[in-house]
Image 1 (tube, rainbow, N blue to C red):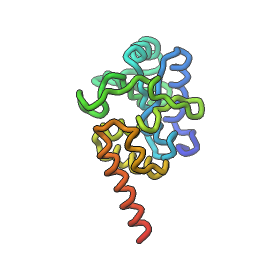
Image 2: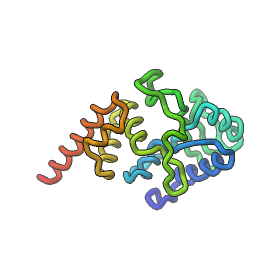
Image 3: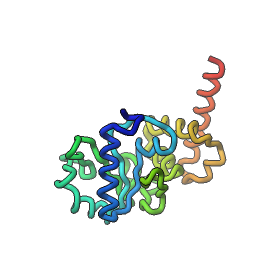
Image 4: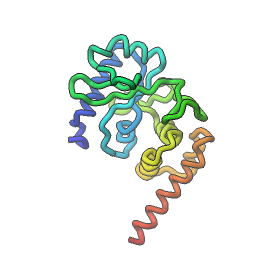
Length: 185
């Protein structure tokens, strides 16, 4: 069901996008669902959405306790009332990952939006940049696969923030090591 676009998480995605568009709240979808939009299909169980500070305030005012329930102790995590899927809100100006600081803050949705099949997703350079800045092994593995499925090479590095360029090259080298292993296997 997931790879057919019929999983509960994808239903939540479409419902969330419908709400945000109707309310004219700028957004971009990030995380696992953005991976799929950028050619690497990996199952995910939540919807990650990037909103501005104002957009997050509007989301809370218009939709929380109506369509989405807050998760206690997690100020930016919500549960879709229809099917229980988690919605994680990333807010512009905060930092990727678990850090309260970092080399760059999360951007405004309008600065990094790419429309794919009528949904605004974070563009590929920003998706890779955010995954690398999060500094988690799973995110690095996602970058290796984004490199593979998008045919990226060293030239893509120049599209990224200088703080993550070295990590991008390491992911590119890992992809090449995996390819070599497969070719010799």
